Length: 148
Image (tube, rainbow, N blue to C red; front, side, top):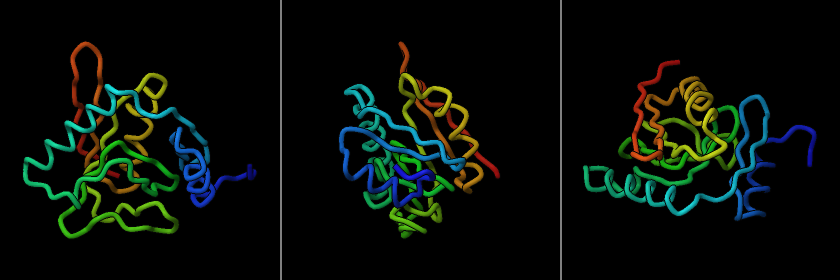
């Protein structure tokens, strides 16, 4: 592994290992996570369907799209402005132009990252809205309007 991982390196690692999700913080911290469990996947599917039935087109609602936030993050769901689908930026990861909302379903082991760290990273990247979904006894969606 290189001493400093780039977004291109991250894309190569992710392509070589479909059994894990790879993310890179803007500070260069590499995270390797297991695939989503069935409950996690169902929540993402339900949210995807909700957006489609509430006026968003299929080119606007995208799951598991890598985004360039100074590092490489892969939100569970992203919502893009009409006519502005995700486009590669300085790597194969999409830039944040046109990105309206990033959604993360909180998983065991990623609580601090999903609740706090990504909220700050996404705000700095100019993403106007961030939701994270808690899946305790009751599923709760925490909605945040962000500002850099």
